[in-house]
Image (cartoon, rainbow, N blue to C red; front, side, top):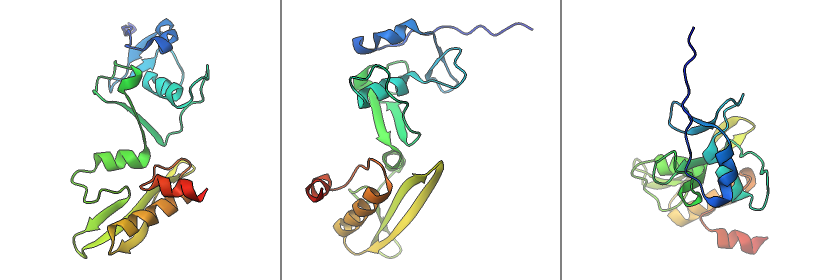
Length: 169
């Protein structure tokens, strides 16, 4: 049986990440660059994102599955740091949601009741949990409810009112 030839791909990287040029990269089915020959998929854009999040570390830890990494220009070979988009899982859901009705994270308007509904997504181990936090008359009040719960259940939450949370520490 003839073995399928895998063509090596040369990534686009910043000088700070030039050591990755010494690795052999291939393109996976979705177009992302993956380290050739690795037992587990090792994605280049996630390695670069880890270096962005953990500056100064020669070998930063691998990113948790809750961190979503993509490319601003949708060119999956362009792994320059300014092209790497890092989002939490809840931010990814918000970005994918078309026609969102609120300017706040975790808040949307219920057309049936004309109230603001609050929902937070987080992980317990490997399981994704969606928790409904209630319906509110005021959009800002709903956003505060989201922030209070997000601080309790999400390791590094992106908040609607981060300046208020910083004042409470």
